[in-house]
Image 1: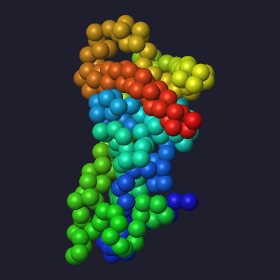
Image 2 (image 1 turned 90 degrees about the vertical axis):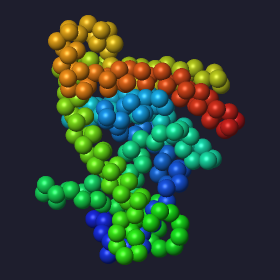
Image 3 (image 1 turned 180 degrees about the horizontal axis):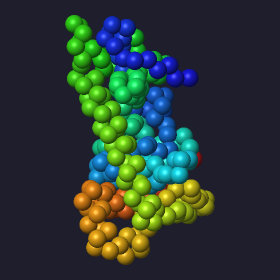
Length: 237
C-alpha cells in the first residue's frame, strides 16, 4: 500500500533513498511508461510499443519483459542497460497536484525509503537545502510531466492518421516453447509510407516524425529481448 506525502525539508529532513536496482525495490515490471521526447534514448535498448489506456487513447511503453512481473534487464549487478526509463528512475517520487500547483510527493512506504542512517542518497542538506540527487529527481519529474502531456497530442495525431495498429509476436525460445506476445500496438509502416507530403510536413513541424521513426527502429530490440529471455531460462534450468 502506497503512503504518499508532500515532500518537505522539515518532516523528511533525514530521509534517504536507495538507488540500487532490483526486484526487491519494485523494479520487477514488464514495461515502463514513456513519451516521445524519451524515444531517442530508449530505442537503443528497448522495444517501444503502445497499449490502450482505457480512455480511447494509447500509452507508449518501453518493454522490459514478455510477461507481468518480468524485467529482463535486472541482473546480479543491477540494471543491465545504459539507459533507464525516467518513469522507473523517478521512484519513489511522483508529482502531486493541489489546484494548479504541482509539488513533489514521496511514497514513505517504498522499500527504497530510509528514515535516517547512511544507506541511500540524502534528499536534503544539513541546513535544509536540496541535495544534488533531489535536484535530479525534480528535473526528472518535470520532464515526465511535460513529456506525458505532450504525448497525448502525439497519440491523437497517430490515431487521426490511422498509424497505430495491433500486432502479435510469436516466439520460439531455445527450450522449444512457443510463446505469443499480444495486446500491444505499433506504427503501421505501410500507412506511414503512404502519407502525403503535407501530412509528413505536419508531423515534422510538430516534432512527431522523429519520434515515429524512433518507435519503428526500436522494434529491432525485440531480438535482444528474446536473447535475454533465453539466457534467463538457461539460469532457471
